[in-house]
Amino acid sequence: MAHDYNNILQKLCHHIGRFASSGIEIVPESDLINQLAIDSVKLLNLVMEIEDEFDISVPINVLADVQTVRDLADLIHKIKSAS
Amino acid sequence: MSLLDKLDTGAAARKALLPEGIDVFGTPIEEVYSSTEARVGGRRILFFGTNNYLGLTFAPECLQAAHKAIDSEGTGTTGSRMANGSYSGHRALEKEFADFYHCRSSIVFTTGYQANLAMISGLAGTNDVILIDGDSHASIYDGCRLSGAEIIRFRHNDMADMEKRLRRLGERTRSTLIIVEGIYSMLGDQAPLADIVKIKNSYGSMLLLDEAHSLGVLGQTGQGLVEEAGLIDGVDFITGTFSKSLGSIGGYCVSNHLQLDQIRYVSRPYIFTASPSPATIASTRAALKLLRDGTELRKKLWRNARKLYSRLDELGYLLGPEPGPVIATILHSPQQAMMLWKGLFDYGIYVNLILPPAAPEGNSLVRCSVSAAHTEEQMDYVGNTFAELRKKIFK
Ligand SMILES: Cc1ncc(COP(=O)(O)O)c(C=O)c1O
Image (cartoon, rainbow over all chains, first blue to last red; front, side, top):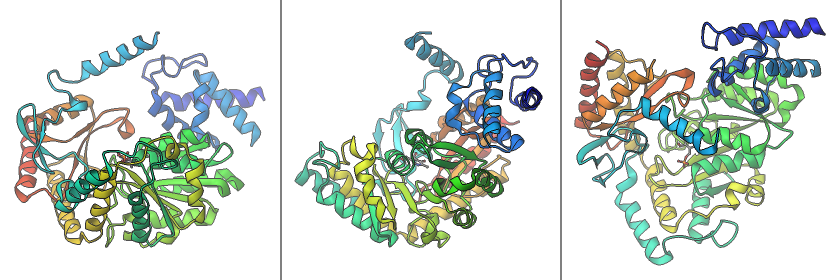
């Protein structure tokens, strides 16, 4: 379980890195919008990459509650566990 | 941050980007000369950014019908379609739309924006899924949000990507609504409708097609992409607007599903707003006839569209994937887009400027819309101006 979660986090950070402002360290506590400069449109495109990476469906309406990298990892973990 | 501080922050960012002395996002039109020309800032300006595809805003038949309606029925209905706002004109127009598409029934809405809101939120709910193209218009996104359904996006016009996302849904595809547009408002390209219909049938989903930009533009009688592709039976619901090729304001949905009528009783954007004014309905009815019989207008529109697309392509501008009445030049920075927009404006040409995040993929767009009413001279003038600016801006 913990292994799964870390694996998700690691893969997620890789994808986030392609959207975030360069040169900023990505940690679980990073705020997607305010620290990593991932605006609403980037976030939607990031979600498509996440869906493909983990072979899951992530409805964009659940993103309202996502603020940090960890929130997003939790969400992926929850969806993956349920499927 | 207070509510007003948030607005101040946004306003400061906007002002930093936009040039002073001209209101790009709210250009005041002082006097309208024709369907293609107006006075702006005391100067004569050529419209190349309206959606007046067939140039019908001054068609004598439409003007006359509107005048007559306003004199006999007044300036407004002052009521919802559900209450006192369904005049015989509204019902006649619904019948005419259904006949035009050879479909069972139709509903008229107050705007195209509300047609999408009403149809999407009326069809899908909390436990359903809506699968939309990533480049969908804001009215589609907002309709999805209003519905409370789960929203999944697929990559623009990418059928493998769409199918992959359907596959992941498993059994839920049977309560899934797929939404695409006939011609996309951003890049002006068309949806691969035959493939979409095939895929949606194999997964047992429903399909809604927004023909906002393709009504009057595609198909022998101007029904839109659905007619061009010969697929009227493959599409469950078609929405569209009066605000483009029909030259007025309002929206519609047509369908062969009997259940369409129930939307009138459950859909808030249909119920909680006043119905279109009598003059609007009257001019739209006249315009729909002109549109249906407008083969020559369509030919002229496409001649103009192909001409401008190939001219800009030859000049080296990066364009949307295929020619059409919506021609988007894609710029990699908002500053460059701003310069091109301002350059065109200084030469007396009005086009649309679309900056991130409104434009796809973080790009900025300078978008032209071509009309059947544009003359050869106007087309040449615009082409030559783009050539001139190409040298100046991209030297
Ligand atoms: C694809 C699409 N759908 C719907 C609309 C909304 O139409 P209306 O202007 O009638 O509200 C538009 C108009 O911008 C559009 O581009």
